[in-house]
Amino acid sequence: MEESETYPKEYPRRVTSTPSSSSVATTSVHVTALDGLVNVNSLFTIAVFVGLSLTTPGQKSLEDRTACDAGIDVVKKLLVFEVVSFSFFLFSSLVAQGLKLAINLLNSKDVDEAFRAHINLKVLRLGMMASAIGSVMGCLFLMLSIVNVIEIRLGMLSCGSKSAIHAVSALVILVTSALVVYISTAIYAFLH
Image 1 (cartoon, rainbow, N blue to C red):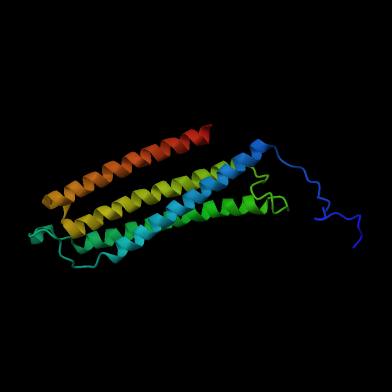
Image 2: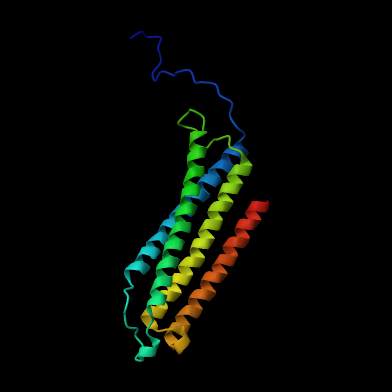
């Protein structure tokens, strides 16, 4: 080895056009938001399968009256709501993963530039909105399925089961208020 060489040796870097720092930060925020959406959808998907595993046809409720036991129609509605909810969460996650894949594939060739991409912002915003709508719809159908689980386990709402009414009221109030915050935040971000 010659004395004139320095260690570590510096290799010439490939010159590429780099986007502005605001573009990099924006793309990084989009990737982070998409990651969060996929993670939340995964948690909700687990809740779907837990709801499916807790119900069996002909199950007696915790109420003493047989009139409060849920019929087969409630179990059928539960299964339909769970499948539709799962479908919306899967749709939302796949759209978000597709957007992340597009961002990563459109990146520059340098490994160090993981969050830089030139992507059509209209397509990105539309995809993110579609993914958010899928999550909202999945939450609504998951809430309806949980109402059915409550009716199966605690008694039908129509027979006046107090524990079922309290549980459904808390569920509907909390989930609806959270969805209002989520939707208004998503609309605000979409418009600005």
